Amino acid sequence: MAERIIPNAAALTGWRKSSYSSGDGGSCVEVLDGYPSGVPVCDSKTPHGPALIFPAAGWSSFVTAVKDGGLSA
Image (cartoon, rainbow, N blue to C red; front, side, top):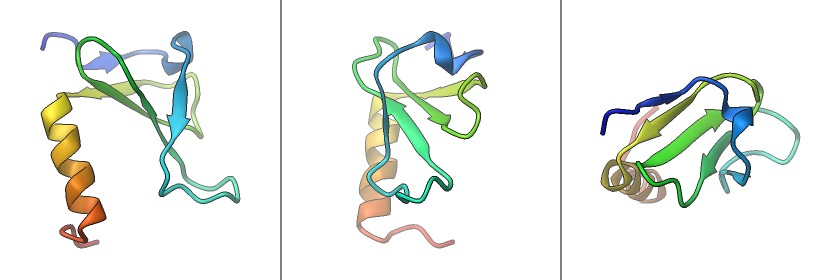
């Protein structure tokens, strides 16, 4: 995968907030489904900032580990 960063996340539409994000407008991670070269992830506090693109398998493993409590703070 050559592309690893999207310089301006606002250039893409269809972002969704993580189900683990708080509803009080605090720190939020947003994910974009259906992107052809991986899973873009951005910080909703900086909508015109960059998004990182993770390989789909790696992102899936990360989400599973978070859900299972396999990651420590």
